[in-house]
Structure formats: structure tokens, C-alpha cells
Image 1 (cartoon, one colour):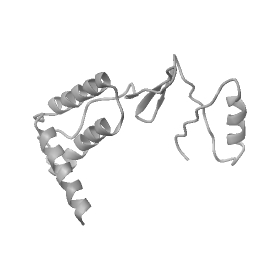
Image 2: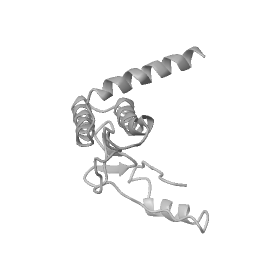
Image 3: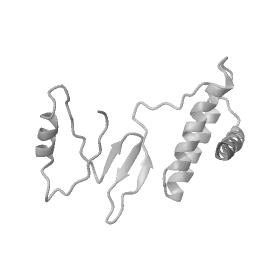
Length: 140
């Protein structure tokens, strides 16, 4: 088991009791808690914010993040080079980010491309390729 997110009401649930129960299910499993800080918690590649009536999200990058992907001038197959770009683009399109956060993430992706020697027009060709592939999958 890896990465579990539990949302709870602090007035009704003692999270330390929950942790104790989880850690006693199987002796080889060890659960840890990462509590929210200043109304947000990082979970996988997201930062989840607690708002009055919603939980807005943002893309999270660890402090050790670098914007390195396979450089355009490497000898790797083009499919390998484009895999990271597709991942970044799919993440941008899959998560329900606010307009401001979507713009910021789009700029980060363009910076990653630029810093690794890519022309940002590669995003359009990858996007067209993804649409074409998904279109052919639906017809089969």
C-alpha cells in the first residue's frame, strides 16, 4: 500500500487513533501522517488546499524538482523524448486547475521544453497526435 489520503472532521475524528488502528492491521505495514500546513497538504503531484466550500488543487513539485527531461539532441528514440512532454500536457489537461494555475503550469511546461532544447511548437504536434490516436481507438 502506498499513498493514502484521508479527509476527516477534526471534531469527530482523532487522527492519532486512526493511525494507531492502521499501524496495527499488519505488523509489516507502517503508516505515517502528513498533516495539512496553512490549509493545504501535498499529495502525490498535487497540492490540495482547504477552502470554505471546496478543495482547489495546484500542481506540486518537490523541492528537489528539476526541469530536466530527455534533451532534444540526445540519441533516444523520439517516442521516449515525447513521453515526458505528453505526461506534462496530459496532467495539465486532466486536472481541474483554475485559469491562473493552468496558465502558470502551461508556462512551466514551455520553460521545460525550452530548457531542454525543444521548440514549443512540439506541443501542437503532440496534441494532434494524441487526438488522432484517441480518435482511432474509439472506432476500433
